[in-house]
Image (tube, rainbow, N blue to C red; front, top):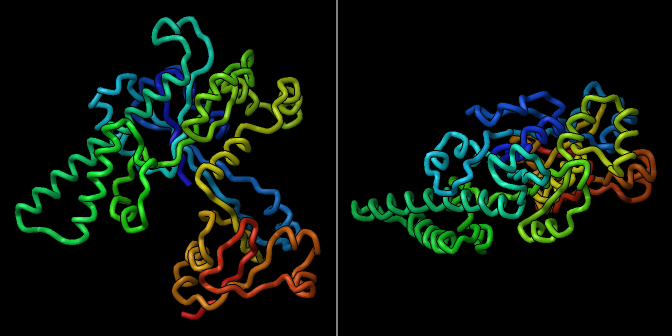
Length: 358
């Protein structure tokens, strides 16, 4: 999973990046750079740890999240140079976008930019996403119409044209593409564009220690735009440099219940609609990430394309039952071990072994 971290200059996005990854990317001059910061973290899952303790595999593999901290966005939504930049192109290749909003006072930043106004900043950023999408959609529509004049007209192009016209109309109203109801064929026709206003959005309110968890008015407005979380970015970044015992002591003082990365991961999974299933054995215990609602055939393909191609059945039981009864043998005796077909909807915590024949 790739999550792009974006925000206006000095919003603290690189500070958030450091807090999540425990890296030490430059937070003072980074806005002047043109290349993103990259980092990856394991998605710690207590269920995987427990399964590894039972099966004692040669390797244990957790899911991963890759974070891409992009250079600051332009404050001006009409900055077409930024809209056509490499950063905007890379943003499109992410699975979700985390938008960091400054919610702390700083004399220099207040004078250089403006006083912290998270709602205003979010709207400014999202307008740039909408404008970027509008430019892409209009360019593609022009190419389709040019193709028509040359005699190139297929049902697929006509469908794409129809969808793009609806998209352009919506974007011109300053509404995101995600507000349009599209069927499967319509979604497939525009999948290659990776439109920004179609991506899941996670709002990160970057507060300071003095106003953390005291921003109900701001949050009430932001939650209308999507899933949100609140951090004290600088505080969380410093926590990452401490050992576990010291970090917990400071978290207790601040009434922080969980680490930034755990809070972020839970919110990201909810925003993207993701669940985890597991494969187990003496060779490997591993977590796999799929979309909620995906069938067993999709899960099989996630493990290996051969498993999907030669799929016969999925031997399935759930972690919660395994934890309750303690072994596969007990699961079978209780009648909780199942053989499922291709269309079985995988549940979070399912433990799956795919029977296949290629």
